[in-house]
Image (cartoon, rainbow, N blue to C red; front, side):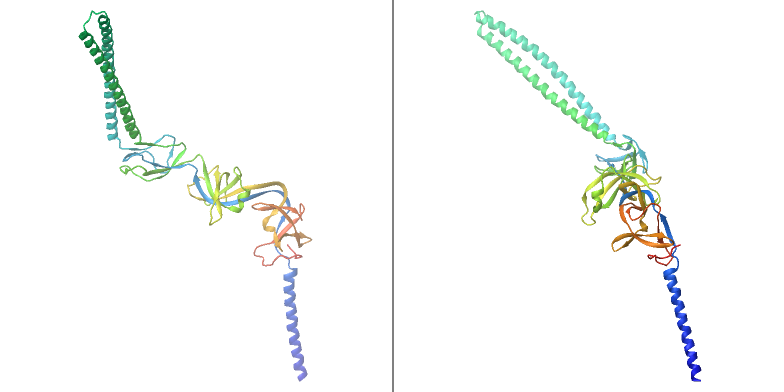
Length: 388
């Protein structure tokens, strides 16, 4: 009886051992022998482009705020927000009734002073004639006096008339000089009022412009410096992007770039580096790189976010594989190469790294297939693992 119980216990224990062995075998199979689903890529000749990334906002290189130089009330606004404007196009006018009167009064004053100048010139001409006659009479009397044919009092009266003529001539010239100064002052006064009148007309300072914002309405009173509207010149639009200072050594004006707007993340627009800032932010350790955008999205706005990918190097006709295929082990790059249905870990030497692919300098040859485990397979790829 005891023997039968013992036998049953042995058999029961044996089945547990067998089950454990089977489970272990299954685990070993799935771990070591079950093929791993992989993503495969054939090593090929390609172009590798290295890029530096920066983030920033779209800006106009030339942007101005239109404001008044004088105090006045807005009489008319000729453009509105989002309107395109050309060079010297009228944007707004201020009430100019009082300034027109000031210009007319200044013009009348100028004409009056010019007339006075004409009279002064006529007085000088008359004084010159009187002086000439006085000099001739004095010379005649002097000859007679020297010949004892004229009395001393006649000689004295001749000299007095000559002195009076000289004084009148001097007074006439002084009056002319004074009036000339008055004419000059009147001309400056007229010019001043004319310029103030011209300041009532606000025009676009450049062509191919766009009204970004309009701040005022008709009837608003403005003072010097009051913003009326913001204009942007569309001839040169760029993205002012912040780039890490570590990339400064590889950047240069004129490099090509891709511009990706947040509104169209799947599309790139061509650009070119236009300017590199010479000051780095002391907190973020980044500096500004201005990338000119050669074409813009259909719907764009100044200030919208964008990424710039600046091409710093390029190699054509080199062996290349996707960067995702690289496996780092002990700080060195490796790849899994498919050989006879298995994944073999292979050390490689890398060259230029692009945004998607990387140059392989050594360790692979053209046509070899590199693999990586598919996401979601749940089975990590190891050296010697079967792959499918």
